[in-house]
Image (tube, rainbow, N blue to C red; front, side, top):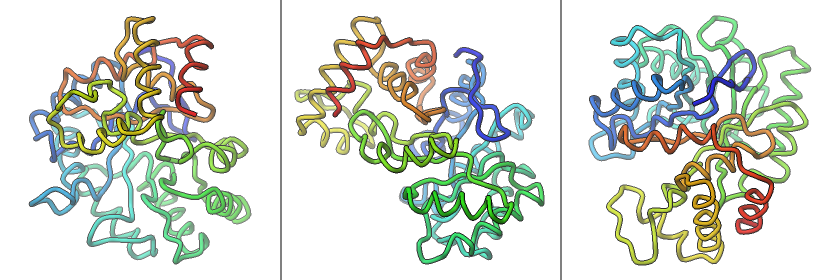
Length: 313
């Protein structure tokens, strides 16, 4: 991965964010450590997790990913060399963004991560039962206390992002420096339009999740294939759509032109979009990492971008 870093407020991050949703779920601790070691060895520094990961898995209660990550940070002694992003608001025991919930959640995350600060703290889902003036002061307090360096928002509407940024500016509070939208070649309207325009207008960076559409954009899912994966049913749904098949054909063409993996092309397309700083992609094994990390080195031509753009429109 090249050294060109992206800026999120005061943070300097690598152009691919490593998703931590698999840690403690489909990747056990030794596997997770191997992936994390390889990611950092390849020049990566931006790791994304959440307090709810992976509460959906049988036997898990949330916090497993943060715990694995905290154990890795402690064993490697490299906390100051990586940028850790986690999220608040979706843990089964700490849902929503009420100030007391946020304060309890951040302390629980810090304990699991075995650190005294979080670099980037996302509101995982907007809590529309509250005004932005109800929870932004609580997030600002975390920044002032040194528990959080920067704040951001995942799964937020353009209107609420605008309201939050305006309130922060008016009250001189910490402001969202990034948004984390669902965004990829087969899901463009989840970000493009009002939300992307609002982010651009305010200089807010995008860190898209589902960057590979649950693995569909790796190209391994085909009408006649049977891939054994925790996500294969989701990926198969894209195959049944006209857009999904067109995107796959366009990826085939561009990947062949550059002798690159499909995942590399899909991530490079995302990184080339306005406001996007660092797509998020997860790897369950070390072998899956090179295709993800080489996206920052792949220069797509205007013809490539046009072909992919038209197929995904």
